[in-house]
Structures are given as C-alpha cells and as structure tokens.
Amino acid sequence: MSAGASRKDFVTDQEVRWCPGCGDYAILAQVQKVLPELGVPRENFVFVSGIGCSSRFPYYVNTYGVHGIHGRAPAIATGLKVSRPELSVWIVTGDGDALSIGGNHVIHLARRNLDVNVLLFNNRIYGLTKGQYSPTSEMGKQTKSTPMGSLDRPFDPLALMLGAAATFVARGIDVEAKLLQGLLRRAHAHRGTAFVEILQNCNVFNDGAFDALTDKASKSEHVLLLEHGAPLVFGAKRDRGIRLRGRTPEVIELGDGLGEADCAVHDETDSTLAWVLAHMAPPEFPTPLGVLYAVDRPRYEEGVAAQIAQAQAKGPGDLAALLRGGDTWVVS
Image 1 (cartoon, rainbow, N blue to C red):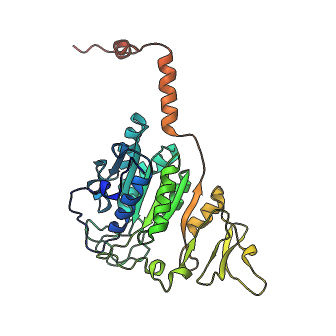
Image 2: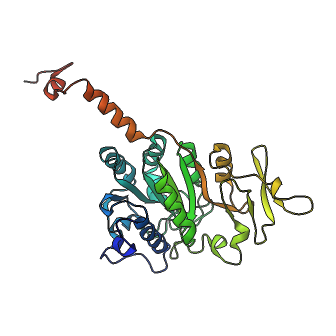
Image 3: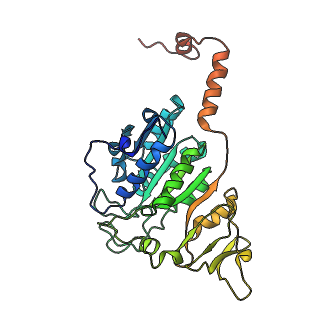
C-alpha cells in the first residue's frame, strides 16, 4: 500500500464522461483499486494517453497525466521514462489510437522494451467518432464507414506485440475484476514493456461484441483461462482441452481415454506457444485470457543511461565546440 493510500486517493474531482454502461468504468475502477497496493508514491505515477474514449483516462486518475495527441502516447511515454526512469508510466490507449495512426509507435515501444505498461482497450469499433470500423473490427463488419461490410483483415493485438518482440503480453476483459486486477499487478511487476489487451464493451456502437465471453451461462465454454504450468483445459466441467499436434492446436473432449495429461501445458516463457495462443479465436477455439508470454530482456532506458554515463566518463562536454565542429558553412 502506498503510505496508507486507498482507492479514493486515486479518484479525481472530474465528472466521468463515458456513456452509461461503457466498459471503461469497470476498467477505471480496477486500476484505482490496484494502484494503492503497488507501493509507489502517488506522485510517481504518470498516465499517458492519445485520442479516443479510453484516452480520457488521465482526467479520472488522481496522479500526474498527459492527454497527448492521436497515436503518440508511446512517443511521449518514451521520453518521459528515459528522462525519469524512477516513474511508473502507464499508457492508456484504444484499438484505433494504438493500432491505426499509432501503430508505428507502439511496435517500436515493444521492440525497445521500455519499462512501461500499455493498457489497450479493445472494443473493435471507433467509439468517440461515432461508430466507424477499427483495425480490430472483424471482416464483414457493417459500420458507418463500411456500410457494405469491412474488407480489411483485423489486427490481432497480441500477435502484433509478440511479433514486435514484446516481453509481456496478456489479455483481460472489462467485467472480470479479479482477472484484470491480477494482470495489472503482473504488468507493474514486469520490468520491460508490459502489454495488456482489455476486451471492452461499447454498448452504444458495438454492444455485445464479447457476450460469449461474459455471459455466465456460456463463458466457461468460450474462455480459456491461462495459468503458468497448468494444462490448457476449459469448459463448465473442465471436460475440454487444447492439444498440440506440432504447432497446430486442436480442441479435444476429455474422457474415453483422454485426460488433462494429453493437453498442452501453459508455459509463459515459450514464444511458440504464445504465438499459437494469440491466434486461437472463435468459433473454432476458446478465447485465451491471462498472461500469454512473460520473459526478461534488457530495458531500453537502462541502455540509454549506460551510454550517457560512458560519455560523461570521458570528461565534460563542450556544446560550443560540438556546434562549431565538423562541416560548417558561413551564411552571409
């Protein structure tokens, strides 16, 4: 706990302006619940966002925050973390903000392995601009900008981050409070870029996109909860599992000679398995939730600090000599 802090210490006096019923409320509540548990002084948290419904987040968390421009939150966060590595930096973004105009920035953030946390709210639609299709909308999606159905193959955010060499890749969902809290704690504890996709309902422009994963009667048949070292088993009676044939997954019915020992075992350090899990999708497969991948790798800001120290060890710099050194021209 941060010096006796509680959830109310992270609540601002700003009116929360999301549509009633929006999944963002649930995410905000879990973030405000977890932050005081992390042992970080409130003034050392910084939330950085871009543009979109999710990007209103810094107004609602009583910490330092930057409401940036469209897609550029990773660039702002990079400069912040490199210059102030002691800060706990969180990027809040959406599927449009991060994967459309911000796609270039987010992949380079991941490959550099900067020690920041990325929360990507994925509702598979542009909510703020009133219902156009997004980079994660399914093919055939009819929206205001695709009245005949989208022809674009959607991005898989988790696969994209794995391809960009992210060191922590996870997925949660807005209404699963305990799961989301656990992922937020894991993301904070991870040293490197922690990427958490949060499936989130937009009840105005894309209502019910994740009903199969949240409906109490059906979710056990459609969700694969990941636990490191545990077999990939799902179903209301834990009677179904995932078996691998080489790199190809298949759903098996347990019983009649097949048991949990025949299922693949989750290993967060296995990049091949993480890639397989990231590509598993309905209706053929359940949707994996939890940590897909978590490994250690040197962090970008540490490398920058080491280079600065190496340069400083050579003696004091001379800015005037630097500006006048090399090829120069006199303009008259």
